[in-house]
Length: 416
Image 1 (tube, rainbow, N blue to C red):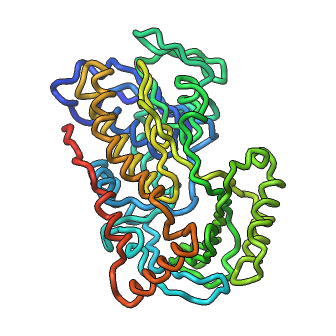
Image 2: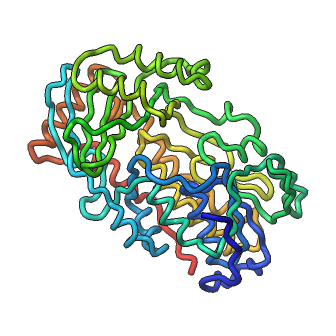
């Protein structure tokens, strides 16, 4: 997608209490999920929006993410449910095996994720990003292959210089640029004080689908380690994930793909199940994504005329399964509060007051002990397996029931 021109007029009038939002210029950093969603709502309320993204284009494809609970209502209000239904990958089964590769049980995904069968949507991350950015065609300015180099908030405006050398001035800047947010670093300082390492390292990659998997996932476990294969359509590659407990953050591996592969290979020496083929696929993959499982916990999500959204403000980690859903909800509320209030400080405070409890409850899904995907101890693994066997026999799971309520644990305001 090429650079798009700003919208000439909003799609509908903004809340009566807003003060001339059409004159307010907003820079959104990041074009993944939170950024385009925020840009959509701001544009509808009459703001002049620019989105800057360091990648050359909106990224397509990718692994599947879930849109559950109140996030589905946000998608409905955006009018993108038909596009998301068309892109729905419809995973129908999760199968679990033990360390020897012997079956434990197979369940519907929502039995362990807490989703609602027939209501929740599962789409490739790139398909969600595309559905969001398609809404912005000819309405919002996009700056690809660029990033924020400096920020100067003088109280009346934010003066930005981009890496390209271009200077611009905006009324507000919103950092929606992910877990390792550049905007957050420029305004709040280094990531370390806000970064909460959850003790796991993961590697994601694609490999040929030689295992006969279609619209399903398969998961192998030992305490503190997990290997997963996810398949969508039968003629596509698989998504492979290897995750393991690691007490210390492997800093030396972050800039060295060879060290990353060596570390993962060392932690999965077994010759059982599909592990040898997964390690081989990881070694050959040209799309290896290596990172730590972590969250962001900030004392505040805004400073002056700069605010944060999505993972930049409250990363929940992939173990929660809720990062994209919380990002959609947060973007909706942030834009609505900026439209509702003439005072940006009041708007940012209201946004945080409404969304923070929801974000924190979803973060807790990944921090309350062992998870279904990576039980931490032998006891947790045995309990997980017993739960799966009961679920495979037709029962619900305790974890699925508990998480279902968290997915909708917010009263979604109406801003129209």
